[in-house]
Length: 292
Length: 336
View (cartoon, each protein chain N blue to C red):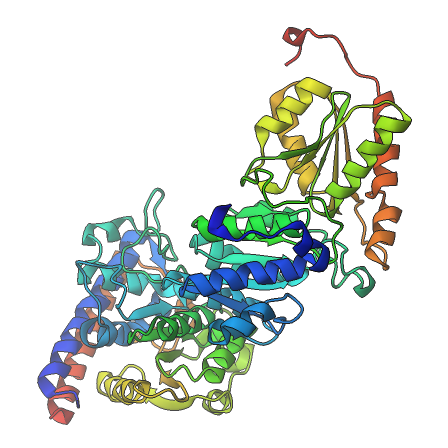
């Protein structure tokens, strides 16, 4: 069902709140992978507040949808989402990255409630997701498996092994997202290690590929609706290639690869919060204008 | 027997280790709908083909992709299945090392790995296919139980134990043509407990895998030829290692030799040495295994002879270690 204006506005509000919480967590932690956290925050918002069939009161519910954050360093965004959702105490965010915390820079599925896979070593999520989706078939369950990779991460060949398995077994019950923020640690992806034509690559690997603006909640939801519809039949899996901006929502940071990982002092915190406010206003205006 | 899968001596004379393992898994798959098999284009080579015969819908071939195999298996396990993932040990331990470490061990995923063609059992294939460092790698991984069965029946026991106990297992078997050590499956196999396969009080040989048979043959020979009483322990579980059996060997025989088809760095010998040193008791000690260099190419038995981990090599080592001088008094109080 198409996203209503009301729902769109509600999701924008949640995404805004979560971005602020992510920024705050980075300050508490002293530093963090905030650039890639912000680029994927819209996806995390729509998954956890619209699509995932999960139970906060029963985190290990067997029939729950699974989400695997292959780009595990985006935990700086993922942890706030899980805490805000109620899986973990929001107070835990104050310990993120600190000695003795259950929340490290990359989340441990055996320590942080709601995490389906311990990731951080890049290139692992696709295969784990394929196994999870195959398990659903063996067990006769209808749950869906969502997996999100980074773009620079795709340099790890193991991703493509996982993609081949998804394609070979027609795992349409597995939905792949690529956070195409065009940046990696050492520079723009196309300078460090060329990825384009990425959509063609995914299609060549057997995916039904949909390219969207990954920082546009409406476009994201429309694409996920298509993927979910396709999941009802065993067929080619869907890849939603999300064109995003590193640091999305914070103008100073947007598209700047040096914000892969960074520290935020009080002055920057104030400035970035103000930029998030501005971005939110623009997003609300767009939803008001384009929503139905 | 555990799991109710019992194979007898006749099976063993007719079936290779790999075939017994294939049958053992096929039996488990038929009994438990949550058990699946995952293979990297090695269903035939690793004998998971036995599962294909009885339950093809629960065999998943991921192609030549060990990293993917482990990721897929971890995902399956986390979703409630019990996957047996089987491939050549060189690649399960090295090519897919990160997936073994992170996807399986870190998550404590209930994945059962059967690493075949281990040591130099695929000798003619050369060092690309030898696995003489896999124990060093796997032994260091938290949560992982590491078992090196000595023959087909022990492999069946290990497979059953892995199935019945939660957590990741690494079972390291050979290409499949092992000398037969046991004539029955019912000899008291227990994970983490060494099995004495030859009694003795003069010296202890601690072996695993294909070297256990060789050690027992050596012990029989030395008893007749030299009048030596050689205790032989089948240390089938490398982790958790049987500390009690090792310290008892130190106390009773005060001379220990370890034998393995693996590098002398990081495998059985290192594991035993760690226990001995921490035990604080004097003991003559020798590690037999591959020296710190790549193994030669050849038939498994030829490589074992060249490296000195066959019965002749063990006989020579026992005679040398029996001559080694060390404090032989019975006063343990002056040692620390």
